[in-house]
Length: 124
Image 1 (cartoon, rainbow, N blue to C red):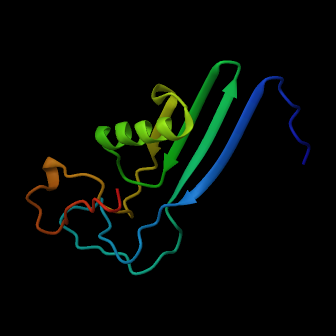
Image 2: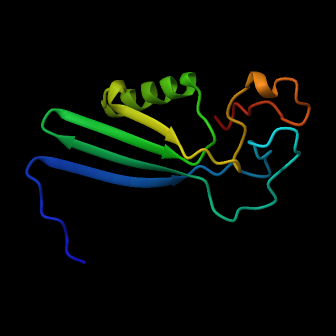
């Protein structure tokens, strides 16, 4: 494989981290269906890509989750900005929309569904 030529002033970094919940969890995404994990075939991950050129920078985070709330995105941006100095507005948090991950938010559509458990704040 031929390496890409260096771009003057461009800096980049990438990483992944395992975000699989510990133990069995309700697998969110199919309302009224009591599905719980019985093991891990493929871990849930968060992949990060950081780019900086000149005064501009961006951090992209892609998570193997069904959904993230505006509140969780805001809190994540705030904490990353405080720890790294990357501006909150330069951080994008996305989801793959897996239907085999934990409950991430309380939706009106499942509020009365006795099968769907509440969000685990420790996981968030």
